[in-house]
Image (cartoon, rainbow, N blue to C red; front, side, top):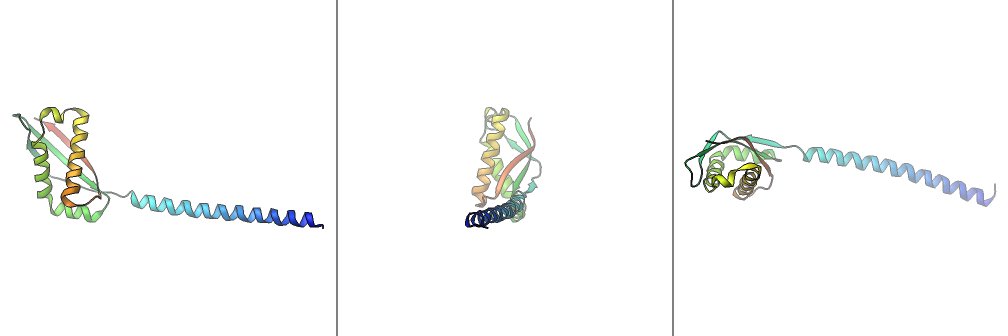
Length: 139
């Protein structure tokens, strides 16, 4: 064998080793990201008892069943213990809204965002991820 053949053989073996190493590292990285993502996607929820709230400048009332979602189980436990604070805070928010503020999809989304941000501030806990209305009826 001459020198060119030996160098070519060494380069070929080096390329194969690097390719196999790259595949192994890629698979390892992908698996660790998949496990981390599935853990961070775990959520917990807590549904408040049915609420009745007055609407600002109206003789109508709002009936709601609200679920609070968080990505931390301890947050949910804390919220369950302080349900009275949550209900009071939501009642204050809804009583400050007119019927026009609550109309349509935009009104519901706006109310959800306002409740979520208010609870995050009230409990100083950013693990609260969403607010859902199981029922939202204006009577």
